Image 1 (cartoon, one colour):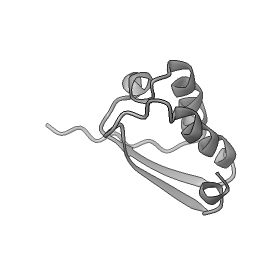
Image 2 (cartoon, one colour):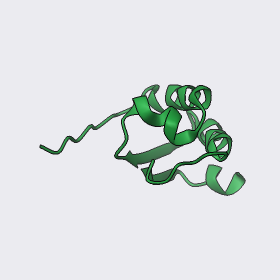
Image 3 (cartoon, rainbow, N blue to C red):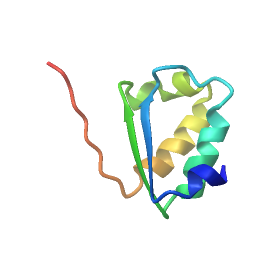
Image 4 (cartoon, rainbow, N blue to C red):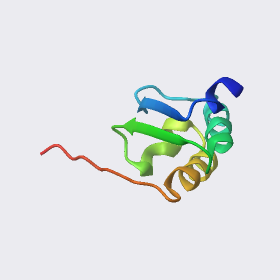
Length: 80
């Protein structure tokens, strides 16, 4: 976990491309360690309503979103 907590910017690309069943707690720990200290850029084609399905745990998904969306800049791009 220390490896992911170190950089000033962490980029997580295509969250939700593959299901993270059983790995959600590790991702949550990384985000929690970085919370309020460093930046995260996260890209996904999944809406936040489906993160519980992607992560396999709705409680972890809610806690993760709480940390990610606090004092954030959010861009939503919709293809028409």
